[in-house]
Image (tube, rainbow, N blue to C red):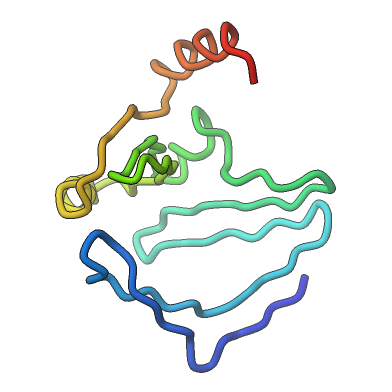
Length: 127
């Protein structure tokens, strides 16, 4: 693993009105089969694992992710771009405010109840 810390972080504006300032703090290059875990102060965690073919972008959505205190949701912005977001347990009101502020559409929560329906819908579509 190689880490390049941006000191100072590169800052840039995002969001509907460009009112959110993000800070690009570091770049991490993982070798095959290496994993990093991001943790919140409240104890939620999120794993990213490098594989030879790409990345596991999250722990199992219907397993470890929920045990780590996170829920996956598919959203769409006004430019028709789709994102999978992870919402921390207890932060739902913050998430709802963000969805309203950024004019996002919640396409659906990805969980034990909805994933079989997503799978079935995708089986009938050509990729």
